[in-house]
Length: 309
Image (tube, rainbow, N blue to C red; front, side, top):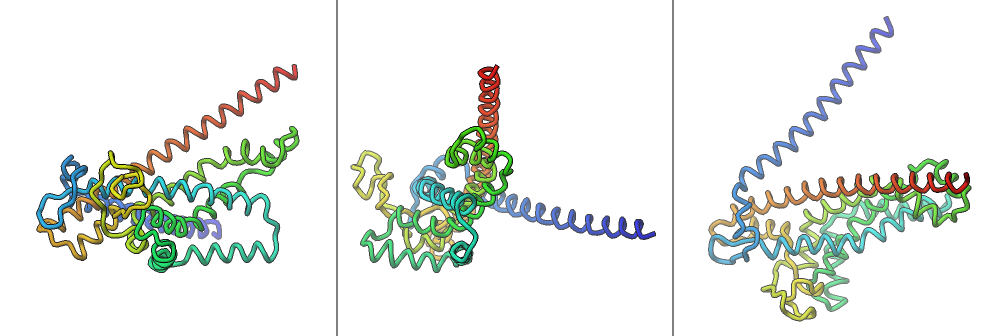
């Protein structure tokens, strides 16, 4: 009788959890389909690569689209080494004690900071105090501050999840601790680390509040033939850069062009597709890297066996 009741309760809770999961998936699908449907026609080349208009209908999002990808690259270049390094330290080198508890408290506090507060901090340090003004690099540094706690926790968790037996086997073969981390631990945890990078990228694409105060609300007329130090050179990190998320906010809050709402919905559709495509590509890269590292490990084992024979 008790077993029957336990099975019934288990089935009920299993059904509830499946229902919650189905509801979350349904809401996500509805949101994506609704935004893409309202922004239908977003694939028009004139819209994707054209320049925005301040007064007339039919403007594009070319500079904003480029700025979003450039901001992504800059932020990942800064955040990945810092997040991975912090994760390695916390998982492999840090000793339990007050200092480690203090570090974890700082990470948790940083993770809970509102983006607008971090944006105001960036305005004070990277815009006013540094004298840079509104810049791409200022925006990238602010988003790094926002994303670093989450990326650090993911990297630490990924590295800590590697079985101790794997590390001990590497150390037993004569490898140093650093060689074990680089050649064994990180390759074993690469898929989870890529997951952290995906979460970071999603926030980079979608962040607006912090970038309003650091990267600015405008983009100069870009010219790739200009000198790298020129404010109109697309790759100059010390120029203002309105990203796509900021452009959507600007259109919805103060846009005066007749088709401001349509451009905003098309831009939102592009933003969602960018995030989805990045997720797919990043996961494929993670699987390829995982297969590569596993394949190279097998080849090395075969060579060791042959040399021993």
